[in-house]
Length: 332
Image (cartoon, rainbow, N blue to C red; front, top):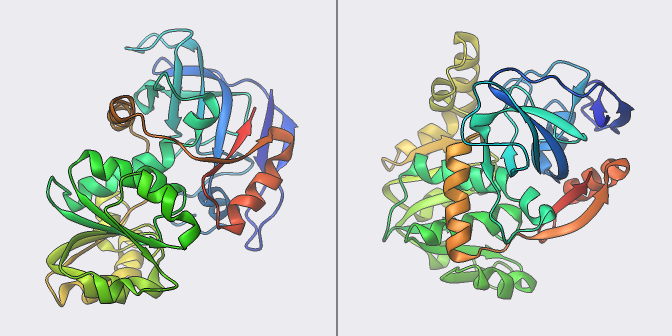
């Protein structure tokens, strides 16, 4: 089968190599998937540059790709709830990515059935960002009636995070450029803030929860609009001790991330706030919940560019450039 391979980390980025490799064998707990489409994410570029190797140390050569849509071809003896021919999608397990390929073997507990109304291209754009949102909301205990600010919520994360938050009954605010306002409001945002005209810090106060997509440069301002005792989940700032303990990391990594995240923990503690960092993990049950939300509300999945597997490096460049209105997708 054809697959896109990373042969080694490169802090400046590098091209993946398209190679022919063997179709993977499945274990008793896995299913063999014939991949139809795969989502391309900023995370893929971070992996290439070695920026997450302290969190997940991958062995090289590595079949790249973190999310997919495909058809079940074969099932292991312990597999329950899935059969040959099912159309499924997933965030690949952290320890075993490999969606940029014609086939993949994956634990059945990581997959879920695709909502029928989504195309394969749309479905491939869902798992990573939808699970990021869902797992973030679980950490911050977002509930009906809460106010939520999603910083920079006009990209692929916001496209999933906004409708999922609305399905939970939250009031949602976000900011971004005006050319995205109509699309974001259609997702259910209660207040859109044009960052070129208004500063969210002058508008928002005592927000219950914040989903940070912008990172360290915005964190102090975000915390200033978060209520006393509120929770913030960051996708872009540094991991902290809580993250290391939640991820059951070794003592050395707990020490490293305690030091790395101490600045943010102290900033949050000043107002009794809670700071969390998230690195989204596979979760078939969570993705099944996402499918239920999508089927009920007919959430749209935003695709911004479709590429062939041979053009994977062009897709990665698009993901790295930012400013996207949706997910770049590989048609395998």
